[in-house]
Image 1 (cartoon, helix red, strand yellow):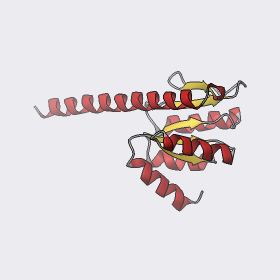
Image 2: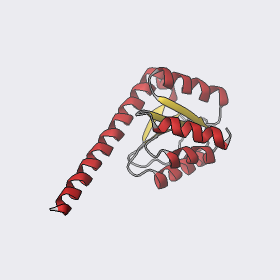
Image 3: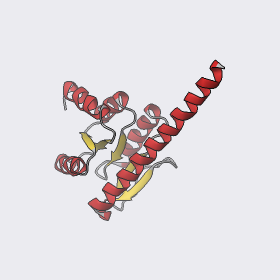
Length: 151
């Protein structure tokens, strides 16, 4: 994906309340998941390199990162490390094909790729809602603190 295409994808995601970034290595699988997520009402984009994933997360840190089972454990861990450095408090979803996966932060979630599309979509929906609730709660605390500072 070109740099211009990444910027456009990130701009479209920024206007969405359900942004999902899918990072993996299988082009056909990634496109299938992107279309499935869009049909479910999420604004999904794909990344095939760590640099592409980082570009999207830098532009829109509220994006839910979904790491596909096609990534090696080392690439999965590198992606999680990158995500931790750019997104404070947002979780990632790691898909597994039954093989050992990368080390997860206690906030991240693991889901078997064999659980099927309904479970995957329901998990993403739940995680996005939790991320949005955490963001709203954090913003409310900041507004209350700001109001208290003025008085």
